[in-house]
Image 1 (cartoon, rainbow, N blue to C red):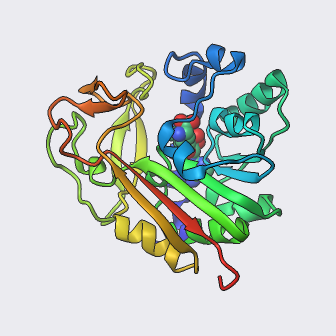
Image 2 (image 1 turned 180 degrees about the vertical axis):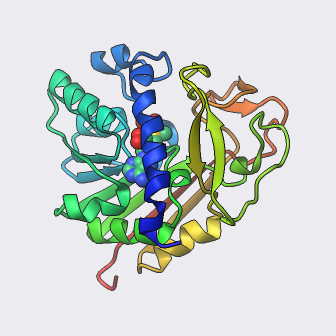
Length: 272
Ligand SMILES: C[S@@+](CC[C@H](N)C(=O)[O-])C[C@H]1O[C@@H](n2cnc3c(N)ncnc32)[C@H](O)[C@@H]1O
């Protein structure tokens, strides 16, 4: 399928995300009130991989309504966020004004990043719930590579492709590990808790094996520096999870047996 053939599927996904934004803004999960008071929304996995951001430029892809983007701004980065949901980008701009940071936000498909963002960055970042919305990682990886300064780094921390093989209850294997086809499901709500937010809507997703994720980035010439897998999630956003004594959430059924999150760090060198 050519990228332009995915437009209908993107439109359906965007409608879903427009419906979710208000719900998320008022949710305990995102806890905007505490964020405004100064609480960071970033977790230990990404903080460890990204490292010190003071005086660095950072581009955040699929930034939703910008809490992570703005958390990096509070740590001293000069930040830009990209997302295709206009209500989320509006909310991100309002939050930016409210807390007095100096972020820029663009509303566009992540594939079109370079049409909207002309600068080059020390860090490109994306996390938790990102590439599962993308059919093809080649244009995604190309946009990342094209957005980096020489010497710059790309960091992704996201839910593990093994986890996306599980069914809606996360209790049995249902979907292919490989990107064989679009996975079309029906959604009536969202991961922040309200599972009955709207009438059934189509949700179009894609599974990407680690070989595709890593391979797409290597193919642009980026060099792999760090690859991590974690058996717990910092978020309680799937049914059947329980908080463990290390502060991470795990499926009660699977205990510590499954990889739930992975992290990758790539570097753009002069040779790229
Ligand atoms: C789960 S959020 C990820 C951000 C972050 N983990 C958070 O919770 O704030 C997924 C975001 O991806 C965005 N998104 C999905 N498909 C996209 C696309 N093709 N281009 C740009 N943004 C997209 C949605 O609008 C949503 O804001």
